[in-house]
Amino acid sequence: MKGGVGKTTLAMQLAFAAGAKGLKVLAVDLDPQSNLSQAALGARRYVEHLKNDRPTVIQIFEGYMPSTSATGGPTQVDPDKVVVKHITGKHETVDLLPSRLELCRTLRNPTGKERKLAKFLARVQRDYDLILIDCAPTDSILTDAAYFASRYILVPVKPEFMAAIGLPLLAKSLSSFSTENEDHRLEMCGIVFNHSSSYSSGPEGRAAIRDVKDVAKQEKWPVFENHVQYLSLVRKVCQRGHVHSPHQLFALDHHSEF
Picture 1 (cartoon, rainbow, N blue to C red):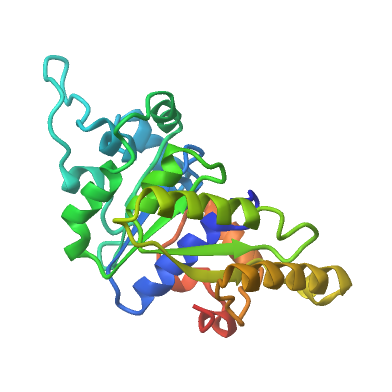
Picture 2 (picture 1 turned 135 degrees about the horizontal axis):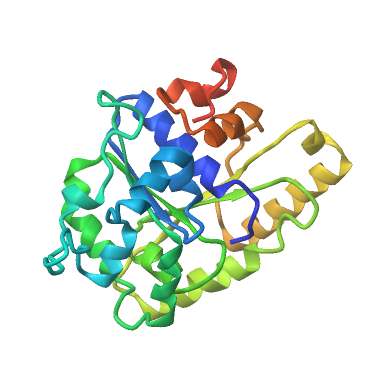
């Protein structure tokens, strides 16, 4: 739940890596900051999406589609209209459920909304081999919504000073959720060290990795041995918003990490 650890970039890299292997993927942006939506669609296309009042994940929580005309009223949520298809080109296999800043309003009136995303994804899950949810860093109704919609949790950690600080809070959040919702099975897929660099092999980086592994051992969480290396290419591609192929996001020697 700590910010700045690369949750969004990891989610996008996983989505495109899976797509490159022929899997049908749905990437869900559940963060009001909408970084995944902006990176995947590009700034211009994302702004056009908002200006045209196109549907976003907000419609899932509110339960209706926006009006399409001056006289028309709201209609039921249509998966084909909410999900942006083939975000990397018509022959690619990655779709996006985008977000927008107004998702924050969901937090103001959260009653009864925590299972709505799960119900929506249950309607479309047969269309996909993999569904990835990019979460906000704060614990809220959106976190519960992600928990209900998920079977596994993947936690990126940046190997740096105080890397383990958010893990006990995450453990408490997961424990509370599982206690209150015994009917829903939620498992820890594992912790992955993200944005690793030459700095990670130094004293401070090694100490951070040890701290994280100590917490993981205590909580009985798996830790992936292979680290995801920091690649400036990913940031540049995200900033440009010109993702024409999944292979744009990977150097050949790093693609195997996924």
